[in-house]
Length: 275
Ligand SMILES: O=P(O)(O)OC[C@@H](O)[C@@H](O)c1c[nH]c2ccccc12
Image 1 (tube, rainbow, N blue to C red):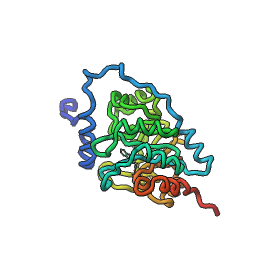
Image 2 (spheres, rainbow, N blue to C red):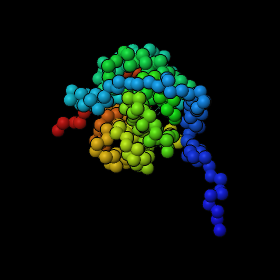
Image 3 (cartoon, helix red, strand yellow):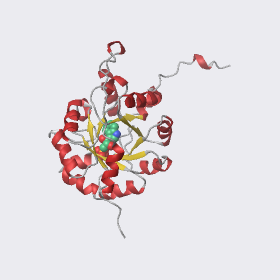
Image 4 (cartoon, protein in one colour):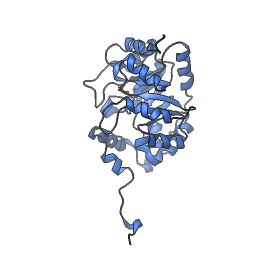
């Protein structure tokens, strides 16, 4: 007879972590090294945000004839060559001038060239909602900086997802839950996520496939605000994601590469073709 309870299983998350690209494993390691140990955490540093509603920002862009775009300030990444050293606040202003409905700012320092300070400066410089893009694994990390939205990645949070959604909402953030397949989507919906992003980039292989969004989107309930993330580089890609049901698009590289204002304008103008 097999004694089930005796077998030493892998620690939760270990198996899936082996499946991640080495770059992504290294990101998670450096994030964990920055999380203060529980004994040093206190509740006193907890922040409270008066968030700019993202659904209103998307609706305003659409009413104005623009595709709702979350333009991302991403100085570099494991899949980008070189690093942009422009002032993040200037970049964000240019994106808003080009018609961005919201701004995303990487705050991860070691692999994306971001920082909580640059997000704070961006949020001061623009009046649209600002998303904090990082690898957030524990509630203490939420208190690093105020933002209107925070990214929560279902794949990394696993069973902690519901608690992190609650911790984010308690502080006033609008949680954006990132998924990559239908199983993760089901977990996100069960955890009551209201804003969901489908990442077209597979974090195991760092490859992009716009078909990911097309496969997952039909399973997303209507009340959820749905964002297509990553790999969108042309107006045709924008139309493809919109046709598949994206309420908004999160675009980084294609906006950062070249003139961010002009790039945002071109992509935000990619509305459905009239016949
Ligand atoms: O540069 P792209 O392909 O337009 O992608 C932007 C954004 O979706 C991507 O930066 C991203 C999606 N999910 C993430 C999680 C962490 C860091 C970065 C990301």
